[in-house]
Amino acid sequence: MKFPSLFTLTLVVVLSGCFFESVRPVDRNLKPYGAHWIKDGMTREERRIDLAVCGSINHEDVRFLEDRIQAARLPTDPNEINANLRLRDHLGDCMRAKGYQSIGSLKFLDGCDARCMHP
Image (cartoon, rainbow, N blue to C red):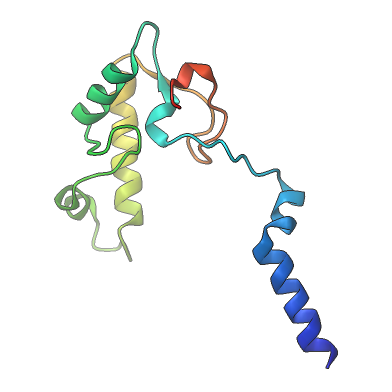
């Protein structure tokens, strides 16, 4: 009888997020991938245009057209995740070529400050 109750308690703690908060504080103010790209003198609208030119179809919340995802997919890819990551890397290269630099963590999407200009 101890096992089911211990299992239930463990499940409740893990699902509540308390366990993960104790390992690393959860940043509840995450900004989308595109908001992490900044350059001097830019406006938010200019960044949105540049993100679109570089391939994003959804402004700062970077997404790609399905046909581009399928074109980037390799025969060895088990799903679309790696294709999306390759497209995101390409978008990052494009933004760097336009003079942008990334701030914060692009992997965990934290570390944005006021320069991100995102509500």
